[in-house]
Image (cartoon, rainbow, N blue to C red; front, side, top):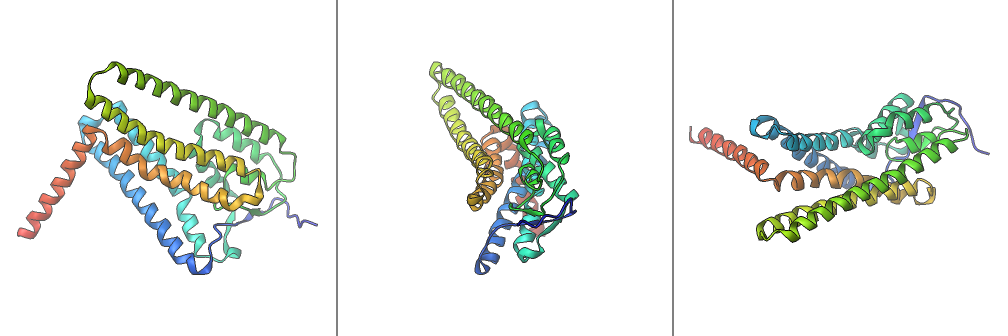
Length: 275
């Protein structure tokens, strides 16, 4: 019979299942990925903030995208890295902290329904304390309850379907318009630039889209929890590293600004060494 503990404030995270000999390599690898994405995204924000000619709506959109990537990974990765070095029995988290992390995860994935979805979760009584996930998210929170979660499941699945329809629809329409413009244009440089940008964007979108869908689906199949964890990491890490490259370095004005910053740093270092 399942041992039930009602409304406990201390929860236990499962974390990542890593063999003892791979704990340090896994920690170092994830830490490297985290540092890379933080440095790249912060760099984009600093360059845009420091150049007045980049204070335009398109570049503010870049800032919003990079800030979202920084926020989403910072709310999950430091805690995940710490838990890798801990014994499974020591991976505990308070319910308020878990709720804050779940809020951040929802903000990163889908801002528009965060408050309502978490509101539906907080109304439930908790009878379990184990979270079979590397970090707290809304789906993990309502699995702690022994109450009827039909409303949560129906709302979550309905929102997911609508998100898929509108997301795929908007992406399809955008690419159709881009294709029409390219077919009408006789500029080889314009077509080449559009193909390069759109192909890389599509790859990142598909990685994030498929990873998110797999995570949502595998929440319904506990036997495949290890695969769900892997796709959860892909959902956060891969797009956050590639976005600065795709949206930043391929934008001419932003690339020129980055080049100027690097040249100034090299010049400054050269002056220091010459002295």
